[in-house]
Every structure is written in C-alpha cells, then in structure tokens.
Length: 103
Image 1 (spheres, one colour):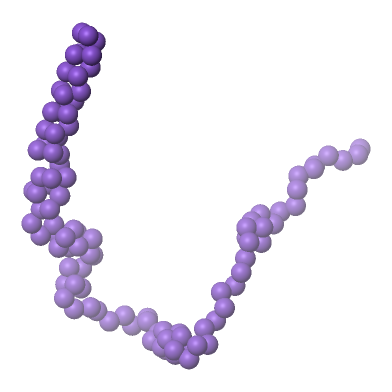
Image 2 (cartoon, rainbow, N blue to C red):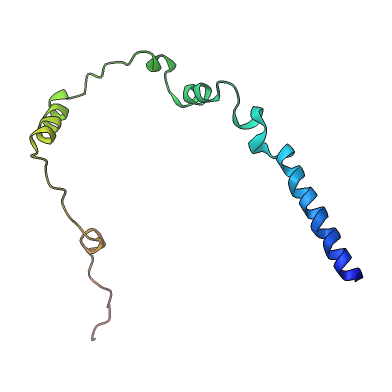
C-alpha cells in the first residue's frame, strides 16, 4: 500500500515538473527564439557588403553568354547529360603494394 502511494506521489510530482517546464522552456520565450528583426540582423551579419542587399554590383569577369546558353538549352529540352562516375573511377589509381622481390 505504501509503495503504491509512493509511486502515485512520484507520478504526480513528475507531472507537475513537466507542466512547469513550458514556462521556462527557451522555445516558448519570445525574446529568445523570436527576437525582433533577428532575420534581418542575421542576414546583415552574413553579407560581406551590406549595400549588396539593396542593389547588386557588376562583375567584369562574368560571362553572361555561358549562362544564357544553359538557359536556352534548358528551355529547348537539349540539356547536357551528367557524366556518370563511380567511386572506383574517381578513387586511387595507384597500383597495389607488393614491394618484395627476389635477390
């Protein structure tokens, strides 16, 4: 009888502890996970030149014909096949050890 009461007491205490977690869980605290303007702050931290967000810059080394040709092939249904390869083709091409020999 005492063991059953003790088990019930532990069960009830455990339920109260679990129910109290939602108040201190960082997921439910709005300032932790949903900080005001956190997305824009993270974006600004990741961008090298913040002015690039509002207007891009030109690149003198960029070849637009390469990109336009790829888009044209895609629209015409004439995409290039991806070369198939396997790990054995990519892997080590050296011959095996050995090293022994007759003297």
